[in-house]
Length: 503
Image (cartoon, rainbow, N blue to C red):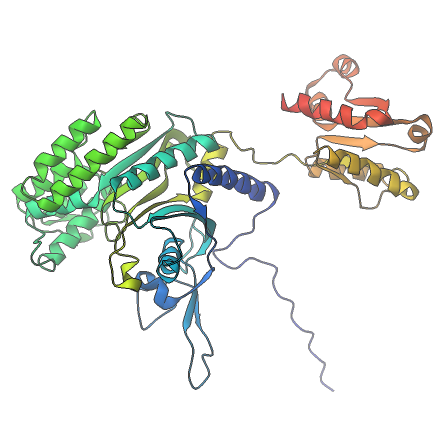
């Protein structure tokens, strides 16, 4: 008789491109998001929590290939095996496409403009890499239903306030603003955009836009080569250029180098570049209005600046674009110093809701990269890699568990995080090892003798570790890390020790 095969056990591993988050990571992210939400709320934005699942049709622009509906997103078809299969559904790719659907669906019940913020995970079915996961958090704020540049200025001011609220000091960040209309005006002046025939010069314009988008990686010389005949990289591969004349390339390069010492000077330089383009002049006027509004509110160039090098989302945004960059240095994996870089970006997107309504609905917003910002706070020492654990009440007599539960109840009522040791209490050393693994600041000890005397022993685990590591025998004797206090003074003494550790 054949042996019955034992069922195979599943592998205990996270799927490729995903990760698990533990303790401090979760609580620190929650605290950071709480602070950001406080700023959003202070600015008058309302919270929105939309479904994590959308129809693929609603995601629209994020669907690269109609014949492969799950390309780029995690998608499935309802009742796929049925005679009449249902809709294709997908996990949300970002928080903006769901907002467009929500606004189009509920616009008759929502105020205009509608100001909302949203926070939560998004999913992308893309190849994972170092630091690049298929699930990550976003934190967005958007205003839908107004074309006023005041909405864009407000988003930029709010972004600056968010960075300072979570612990990025002034001088360690800058919010940079540009305008897609100005870039379109430059394209028009350079002869690669015909307002009467937008499809004309589409190939050349596409090469120019991709070249501009590679400025950080290729530098000015590399971009200049792509504006002309083309560029050969270090491996010898040749990338075809846009074939612009020297004069045309000069116009584009002038745009990328238009930043001056002040916002007013930068705007003036851009105005000269787009002279003759109505679209470009409109963009310059918007930048000027935004700069004036921010200045009136007290947001100077030390926090927010006009910068033509911001070229994010060229195929997506329709007007102002902005990016928050952290300017302090960190050390990369090879020990080289580099700036931390971008942690947030956004802009005006006036065409997204139109997909649902057929009518143009102006909108502007920003998205903060939650994991990037959290990493920045840790790099600045604003967030510790390990969170302080709870006070641990040890168990010296398992028959007196009610006494120990009474202790943690008192501590918790006073807002102190605490727990009773719930493992096997036979080995006291294991209880202290547990407290160490929990990163506990204090251990409470009450054996039979302490109970009879009406006292408890309170061990300062942080000071104890410091003494054990650094102190001489004499210093160890002079600096006790364990205190005996009356049982009634338990909470008071624990609070005193915790305050001393934090100080």
